[in-house]
Amino acid sequence: MSSEEFPAESEGGSEPRVRIDLTDPKAMRAFAHPVRMALLELIEVTGTLTATQASELLGESPANCAFHLRTLGKYGFIAEAGGGKGRERPWKWVNAEINLDSRQESRSAALAARTTQQIWFDRVVQRARQMMGSEERPEGWGDAARASRTVQFLTPAETTQLLDDVRQLLRRFVERQDDPAKRPADSLPVEILYFAYPLAHLADMAADEDE
Image 1 (tube, rainbow, N blue to C red):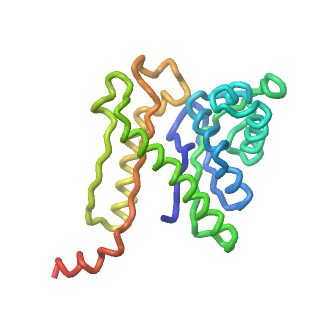
Image 2 (cartoon, helix red, strand yellow):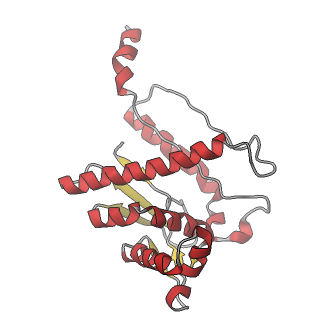
Image 3 (cartoon, helix red, strand yellow):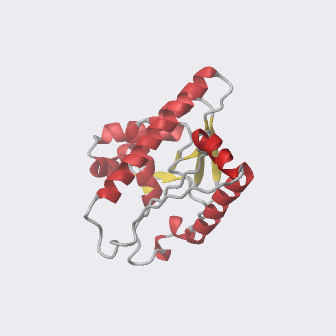
């Protein structure tokens, strides 16, 4: 696993898209904090968020939320929306793709990148495990939420193209990211995970079968 796109990976929106390439270990550590990851997930859905609002949603103190929002703002993950003061100051979602590659120039950055990747991966997989294993679903979502797995024989170029194709499919919904008026009445935030990686430990076996 060399590159990750994290929760802020919206493909569109009303504002120009920003690409954040994480190479600074300090920025990686700022991103990897569980409260900050939760704040990013909230602001991705709400569009704007104050420390007071975040406190009510996360059960953290307003002062703690304000500190973490400022830290996210410092590294460009979110931006000030204008207006308000102190804990009532709103922060806004920036239309950002957060990219983290474990192949970093320095050893410390590479270690920080791998650690950050693992923290993020554990977070989203644990949530997927909880949601997919739960019998409690919103009305109408009994058959809509599902998971699947497949193994295909692909080249690196084909794998890249396949992931690009998936992203293209998701772009049909991007206008709903920033404009709540365009969201259907029965729509909910849906987290979609997709991973693609070679099963190197099976490579020799697959080659033997072709002979």
